Amino acid sequence: MLPACRQPGGCGRKRPCHNRLPEGTWRHLDSGGWRDFHKASLARVSCPRCGVTGQAVSFADADSRLTRPFEEQVRWLPQRCDKTVIANPLSVA
Image 1 (tube, rainbow, N blue to C red):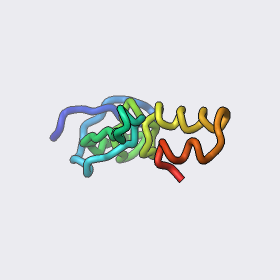
Image 2: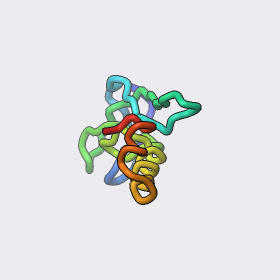
Image 3: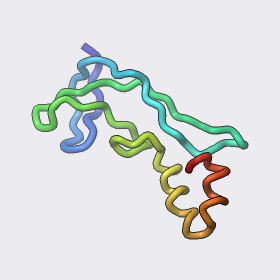
């Protein structure tokens, strides 16, 4: 059995891990003109309240493939720029 890991959502208690999930990838803010990604190997966690779910990460919301800073930038930019100015540097459509 793997060491205890934090249960995402619901209760937030530490519970034993079942097994490893495939490596997850999250898009982060670009760094020096290069696209930046966070990669992490996560575990499946069993909780009597929440059931079996994936381990939470501190830098992204559940079920998101974008980091919180990237999401915040994408939400803030449309208030200041037009869509073309945003889409090209962030490589989003």
